[in-house]
Amino acid sequence: MVASWVLLFASAIALASPSNKWRIQVSSDADTDGVVVFRIAPVNGQPVDVSVPVPKNAGENHVAGLIRDAMRAKLGDAYRVEVDDGEDVLVKKHLGDANFELTVVQQTVKGTRIRLDKE
Image 1: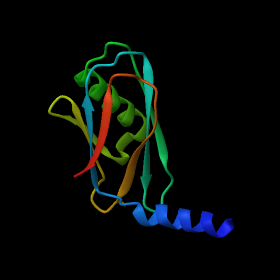
Image 2: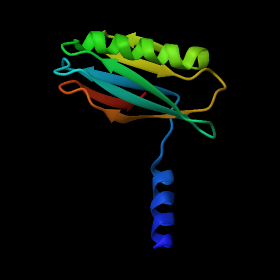
Image 3: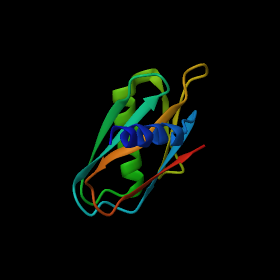
C-alpha cells in the first residue's frame, strides 16, 4: 500500500509542469455567489492560496477584475498580474524568479468557467 502511494505521489510530481506565465480565462457570468481559490506554487517555494469572492450576476470581465485585484492584494509585488482582453488575467513571474504552478483548488461559484493555460 505504501509503495502505491509513493508511486502515485512521484507520478504527480512528474506531471507537474511549472511555467513563467499563466493565463486565467474567465467565461460566462456568475449564476450564484461563490468563491474561487487559486494556488500559486513556485518551484522550491511556499504555495500561496488566493481567495476570490464572486457575487451573483458578475460578468466575466468583472470576475477577471476581481481575480486581478485579489491576486495583487495577496501577492503584492511578487508577481505581475494584469487583465488582458477584458476577460483574461495574466500572472507572470519576474525575471530571475522561479517558475510556478497555478491551480484552482476550490470553486463554489456556479455558471462562471475558469480555464488555466500556460503561456
